[in-house]
Image 1 (cartoon, rainbow, N blue to C red):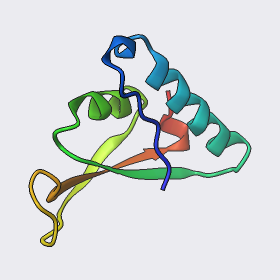
Image 2: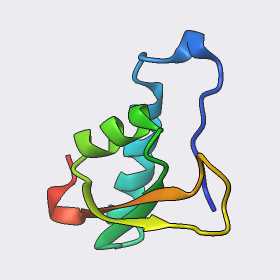
Image 3: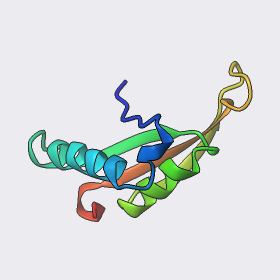
Image 4: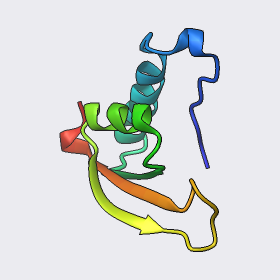
Length: 86
């Protein structure tokens, strides 16, 4: 599992997460020759979802983890194909 996390709110909305995520995906598509990236995100992570949509991800599925406690029970699956990457 890999994550890019910015915990200090003073660094929110400065483009850091966007740049780091974009660099990771550019590497995956160009150097690793990956054609599709899928990720899971919790619906309450509105900032993450907005970032992924900005990059071209589409929400393809919602799943429920019956063993998880709220608010981690519901999960969105999002998909990005190389040709749709912004």
